[in-house]
Image 1 (cartoon, rainbow, N blue to C red):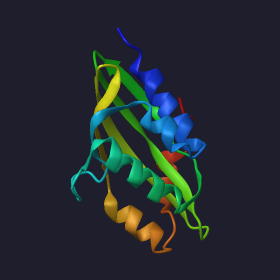
Image 2 (image 1 turned 90 degrees about the horizontal axis):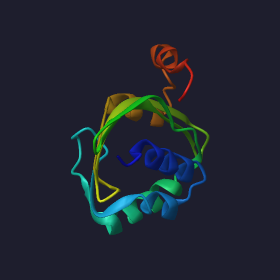
Image 3 (image 1 turned 180 degrees about the vertical axis):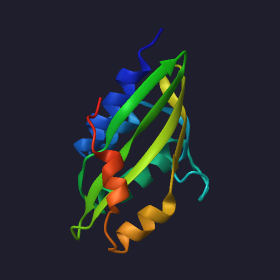
Length: 142
């Protein structure tokens, strides 16, 4: 069985370096990314994903994305983690999330993330990270 968790870790390591090409290397050409838990339409295809990643890079000062739990069964990976970063203006954002990756041909074909979008909106608006969120994130990454 393919080690899709290793692929996910390569995605995370690439994103820590703001290396969009490294992320894209792990994605299927016809990737679908539901990165808003259904709030917004999914990102479709590698070309749209490349544009999205480049736009995201331009808004981030750094990235501390990490996983707390991860499991693989067949071609599916489940993950729990935090998307944590500072924006260019220094605003800290920390969003706990869960996600599911479906692999096809060794590449991520379907990527679904579930999180509370209102927390992200609050934090980007400068209201800070709630203590309840920090308490959830105070544990070792895998």
